[in-house]
Image 1 (cartoon, rainbow, N blue to C red):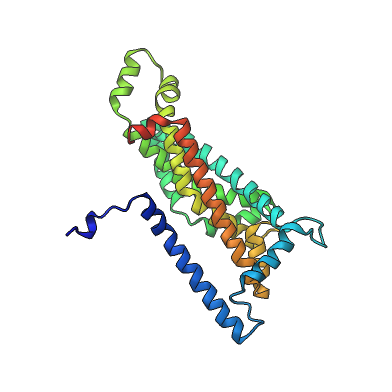
Image 2: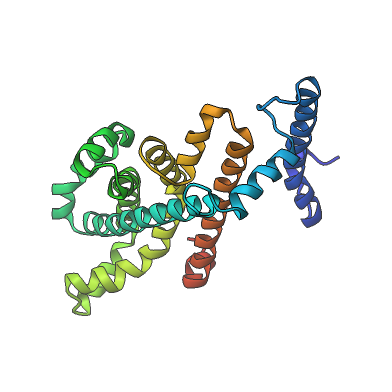
Length: 272
């Protein structure tokens, strides 16, 4: 008799087991929604899927009477623009700072303690300061994302740079490579796939800071819309928006993983 620890599902069973929890959650929601609506047809806590479809049809396909925009797509575009810019800046800063502090002992001695301290500051505590310094516009939201995730990326890249075998650096210097050449031609190519992994791990935090900033001070965006309609208990908007954010996060993560495999196949083939 096989022990459970040794059982390995084949591909078809793995797919079924993957879908099973989602199917169960969906079934529980449908049953709960039907039960609540049977007692009170005006209940807003668990809308039916017909209510979801009706509300989202208006937001996705019908222009707003006030602005003339398709609210759903405008919110999506605004949030992705902020998130993309924030992650791009954070990844660039994280790569540069992580590379320099990880490869150059003098830079590490000067800035590693500061980087550690910055990484321990709760970014949400800085939000009022950011609004005061940068105003309530787009800049403060992007800066919050950058401050929230770049220290994590920088420390991860720093650690990865320090793990690169010293023999490679010695050989490079033996062949006459100067410090800039070692940084750009030896270390940087090996750190790029690790940078993508670090960005993937920081995406969840990036979404968190984005939603928080939009909820407090914004006129559009996914987070803004969720917190705007909460006062009306509009779960027929909130739940689809939450599901859409989850799907977007999954797609961005999948695209980064796909790009990493295509751009740096050696990184995955080598089991690094």
